[in-house]
Length: 159
Image (tube, rainbow, N blue to C red):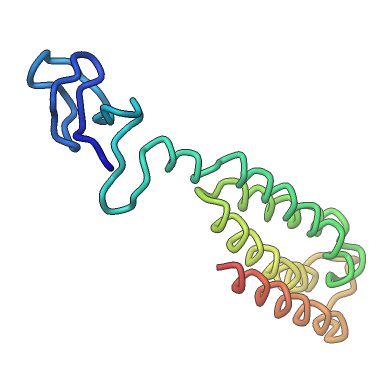
């Protein structure tokens, strides 16, 4: 059974959306449940503020970003044109950083995966203008397209 929201300072009854106590004047970020002493849950999401901050999980997104970068470093050489070592490493690390900056674990996995899927196509296009990387070769486009299709399908399945 859910208790009435109470002020953490004086335990006076307050609204669940109140930011201050009308009894003692105490400012507080959320009302507190009288029984548990924890913030009252939001009626729409059924999550308290502290639970939402845990679910946002920036450390989880950082871990996913690290994993996206590692997967990119291992798999991108098979899908990129020759002599693009510096560029593919930058693309893999950039995809990982992009994933790590997302707000949630799910967004990090899906958006990081999509960034990784686009990377070989960008690298193939870049190889057209960078001297000494092989120039125009449709043979190098096929692995890039296959990689983009497979990785984007995986990223979309996560989303």
